[in-house]
Amino acid sequence: MIYSLRKKFILISTISVFSVLFVIFVIMCVMNLMQLNHTMDTLVDAIVSNDGVFPEHDESGRPFPSGESSYMDIITKETPFSTRFFTAWLGEDGRVISVNVESVFSISEAQSREYVEDALEKNSERGWVSNYRFRIFWSGNGTAIVFVNGEMNRMMSNRFLLTAFLVLVGSGMAVLVLIIIISKRAVRPVAESYEKQRQFITDANHELKTPLTLILSNLDIVETEVGKNEWLDDMRSEGERMRTLINQLVTLSRMDEDHANLCICPFDLSNAVLDTASEFQLLADERKEALSAEVEPSVEYHGDEGLIRHLLAILLDNAVKYCDDGGKIKVTLHKRRHPVMIVENTYGNVDDLELERLFDRFYRADKSRAFDGSFGVGLSIARAIAKNHHGDISAYKKERTIGFKVELR
Image (tube, rainbow, N blue to C red; front, side, top):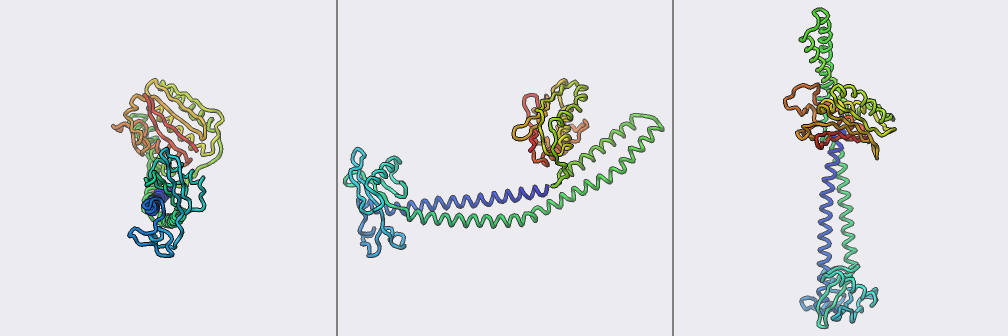
């Protein structure tokens, strides 16, 4: 249990850390994209303001000094580079009537027309077509579209995001290592408390079994001398009840251990289910309950056969105890990807059951706590057995029927 708790602690902490890092990275991507678009739009707007021709002066009217070959150089103050752009003018019918590709050498006039068609399909004033940022505007000669190459800006942006991604992943891995290191210390108080609880159950088992065995033996001696009577029967019944409870607590304690001693071997699960169901057939007949089994033949499983039989016996015992008079009990076994066992029984008060609490220790649906041979730990043992076989058990209800589904992996 402690090992499982530690794994959950590491898993939850890891998910939390990487979720935060993922959100940070997404925010960085969005902000980076917005900055990239803003930078490119500033350059595009400068060209648009000059009617689709690269301006010879900056926004203040100062001519570009020698060595500053683009408006972007004024904005970024970085190494000068030639601004590659082209402008297309459209007619009233939306067709390209002229294209100016003098400032770009990698785009032919035919390719520029394809870029124009792609830009018009976006139905947006601004946007991206391949590595070109465009803007549709109204010039003195009609509608025009200017395209400015943003490949270098995108490359710089991608490099920044890659660096940020690597830094965040590295930070996350470093935090994960720290989480693994401190996880043992984090769960230590729980581990110590659990160990004390387990030791208490073990000690209580030894301390109680000896006097209990002595009491039951003395009852047998007294009964041989004074004969049977109801007081002796009541004392023996309560003694046997206490012995059963002690054994169940010890079993549950052992099943909760991280490395329970399971005898894992292949066995015929179909035969195990049929044999266990047949053991309850007589008891069901006495209660006038119809017990049926629908078992897929030759279902093989690797596990502890004794514990799997015990799990099914717990479910059948509950089904027989709580089935309506003259009701039906059905056991089903089938295999798809994994073997699945289902035990259902009719139960008129199924709507009053709290399914989420059925597997709690010492929980009983009978609020009066009247003893019916059950202590409320059987389903807890069943869940522990399923868990130790890497499986799962769940309860469900439908009209006048309650069922338990066991998936074995």
